[in-house]
Length: 182
Image 1 (spheres, rainbow, N blue to C red):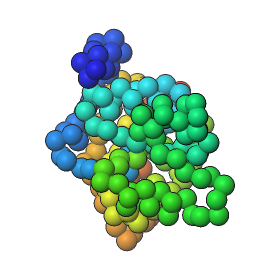
Image 2 (cartoon, one colour; image 1 turned 120 degrees about the horizontal axis):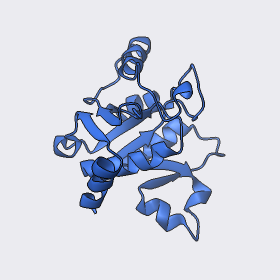
Image 3 (cartoon, rainbow, N blue to C red; image 1 turned 180 degrees about the vertical axis):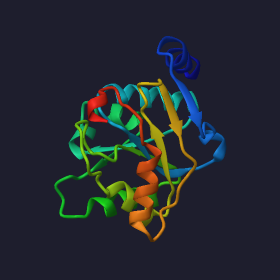
Image 4 (cartoon, rainbow, N blue to C red; image 1 turned 90 degrees about the horizontal axis):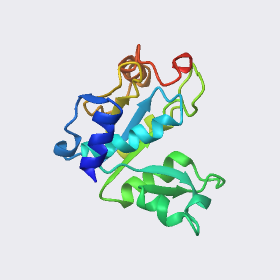
């Protein structure tokens, strides 16, 4: 199916990959992958196609009820992992536990936490990476240039402000599907 994903991604949609396109060869088994700017539902299929193009299994988290009958098997097959949104347990710790229980887990997330315009990103992805001791890999959803630019793995330091400045700079000037939300 990789050939079909490549055909759709490159030929039909006209997208390209730049930056660190060797994720499958880098042998990074665990990472938090952040995609921005997240402005539209179109981001989902671009991400699904991209993971097939690269040949890298990625995961996502979803509310536990999504993983019940009859569709639970579909979400698991797509790489989903259930989390209990209503538990009193800290969500970061719950997701770090998933990282610790698995040999391979690459969690895809949107740092904005919404498709709307936002000035402030959520910080969960950062604390998940830090507590799980895994790198953050950034990729752009650049609809203006039809490209996904992928970063080298970045390990959070003890300077959160500097780290966020570095991470956000990676996405400077990138326009999502709905540019005014970028």
